[in-house]
Structures are given as structure tokens and as C-alpha cells.
Picture 1 (cartoon, rainbow, N blue to C red):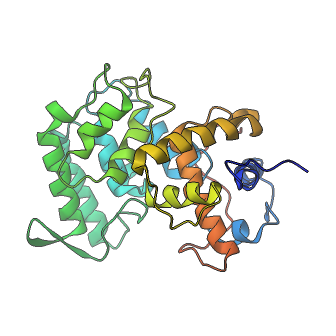
Picture 2 (cartoon, rainbow, N blue to C red; picture 1 turned 90 degrees about the vertical axis):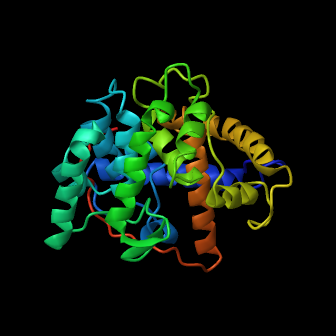
Length: 301
């Protein structure tokens, strides 16, 4: 029997979860038939990939937008566009959106055409406002108009918002999060993409940068044997130091392919751990899971 960590009583469970979710991913890639796990929660509900980079939409974005435009100075803005829409069919039809000042109008018109013919334009994954209409700047507008207003304003601020080679990820994040309409969650997601471009690949905090979210705050509390609703007394600095220690304890016990998981992916995994634990407590996550084979994968491992 493995000994439980005194500092992280749920560490064995977290490691089991990451290994099991990774195993599901590998079985799907090999074309094996479902079920890919005996775990009820993982069979029934949708859980994100262990590596964000393996997510279907992320893979499409990186293969079709990020890598071909890795040196583009407007890559950061394109990743803002990508995550605000986050639907492969929309991004594929609307096309590469930069420079936004010249291509943005065409991009948005194509998105509007999709909407008018009844095709879906967005996914809910990164849309933090609900309903067909939203309040923005004192006015009521459609979600598409809302996104356009935010993206237009971000483009106007591009000279101060664009990351540069001397930036850390934290510094690049600080630029994005100050943009009108961008909260910490969306800014962190944009950085999670942009860092794979050429400008930030050598950032000194590439592996350690992460921003606390409500799900990962609960997940890390669980890992520490606390109630998930427990506040972090030392604030985000306390949470951050604890997460880095948890990462250090976790990585050696993962498969070789996962032993370089960065802090953002560990944070991501803690969100999913919290969701898995809620199922064990009788809760029901929002999204159920339909077993389908993956698309847009080029690698097999």
C-alpha cells in the first residue's frame, strides 16, 4: 500500500485520476472500442484532457492557426478570437483573422452568415456570459456583437497588449488581462495558447506560470485534505506555492509523456479532480459524455 502524503492526503487519488484519464485518451487514439474505463464518473461525464494541448479544439487551433503563424506579431489577438468562438467549424469557415483591422469585418460577416443559416457559431466552453443577448457598455447586444466590441477594442490596444520576447508569461498575462472585457480566466487561456508561439517559448516562467481559478482552488483544497470551500488564507500567493509543491510531488509518478506537465495543466487537472470528487459525493457535472472517436489528431501518442 502506498503511503499517503501528509501534506497532500489526496495525492494518490489525483495521480490515479490523471493516469486513468490519460489511459482513456491513449485507448481512443488506438481506436479501441468503449468503454475505456471502469470508472463511473469518467464513463458518464465529460472530463477534459490531462494535457490541454490534446483537446480536440486546441489541437485544431494549434495545427491550423498557431503553428503556421507562430511568428505573426498578431498571434495573441488571433488566439483571443479563437477562444471567444472556440468552435472548429466557425474558425475553419471564417479563416485566419489577422490583421484584424483588414480581415476582422470579413471574419465577423462570415460568422453572422453562419448564424443566419442556423449553424452554431460558438461553444460555451469559454463564453462566460449566457443567453442570446448580453448587456455591454450599457447597451443590449447579441453575443456576436459583444465579441466584436471586445475584439475591436483589443485590436486598438495592440501596441501595448502584444507580448514581446523579453516578457515572462506573467508579464504577457498582465497585458491581456487589462484589456476591456477580459477577465483573469480568459486572459490565462489566451496565454496558455500564445506561449506555444515563438515569441514566448523561451519565457523563464513557461512551466511555472498559472492563475488561480475557482475550480482549481477547490481542487487543491481537496488535495490538501481540506473542505473544497476553504478559503486560502494567504490568498493566491499561498495557493500558488502549494500548487508548485503539488506539481513537484505529482510529476514523478506519472507516465513519461506527462512528466513535463506545466503548472497550467496541473491547475487544469485540479479543476477536473474537483469535478470527479463531486460525482463521488453524489453531484452531477453539467456535461454528460458521449463516447466517440477523436478527430483532428495527427500523432498517435
